[in-house]
Length: 398
View 1 (tube, rainbow, N blue to C red):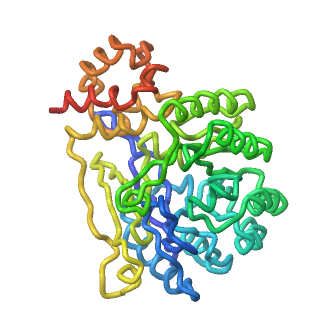
View 2 (cartoon, rainbow, N blue to C red):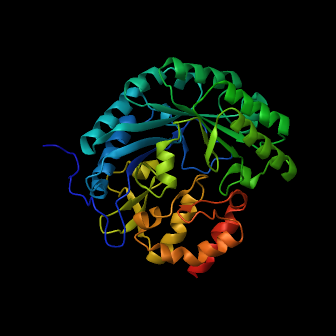
View 3 (cartoon, rainbow, N blue to C red):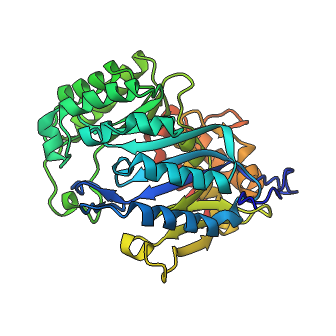
């Protein structure tokens, strides 16, 4: 008997305009070699022997319980995040991918991304990952300077970072992202732009370039390092964006830059208020049903609890109230520099566009939103002051 989820789905919009959005899958693998001092993700230092088989079994059992959210849709993308998913063997990921495809159809053009560390140990697996059908890597570089990598608590060297890119290319990955941070401890504008130029010279198809921030429940939060002054951070941001544009990288989201046709489909679905099932320790999801009810879900965080068959995978869920939907939607789509069609608001929320009208009028009058009546897109000023733009709609809710 096939395990593939039922094909019963709503193909036509409801009277309120709601349509089931595209569906993606997020898989969280929580282990890493060492917890970085700036990281607030659900990650845990790995033991010498990872419980790969048990965790894959748990992931598929978790997914079985979430098949009720599929509603006949196919998977448009899969993203393996962490932690460090590249700590898992190709054999474990093969078992997992086969199990997923037995349960949910894959789109013919599915994007499957794996987050990877640049360390030599992970590089050796790249070719095997590619043979599994994983067609996109996201490599956590962060910096090409050894002193900065040490300050960030990273376990790879600058040389390994550059080598990882070449290994990815040799393994057959023609689509890969490099994660790079700026505003690092004691970093000058020249050092930040040197890092960025080095990344560009390695010719990735996508760059995630973002500023280091101090997050609660991290080592850096309790013992903050000396960071660049605000005027230096501004200079880095301005010069870096110009450099990326000069080399053909289009900024499509606040911290995401892509060459032509290389926009990350998983990212785009997320920021467009699409659906994604989240499986794994601490994974979050956002799922809709054909009647337009939208839920957020979150799974139990501790790997030991997640692997305990006597404990539930689901830690909690909440249904989004109609009055919260406008802000939830805008908090996502306004991060997209090209915005979205205004009609997408009703398609993804079931709420009439008229609910936004007062906020749209004020935002346009203040120059924070494009005056194009068919689009929801922040103006250049609105992108700089995104919190101010969102505050307009948050105030209207109350």
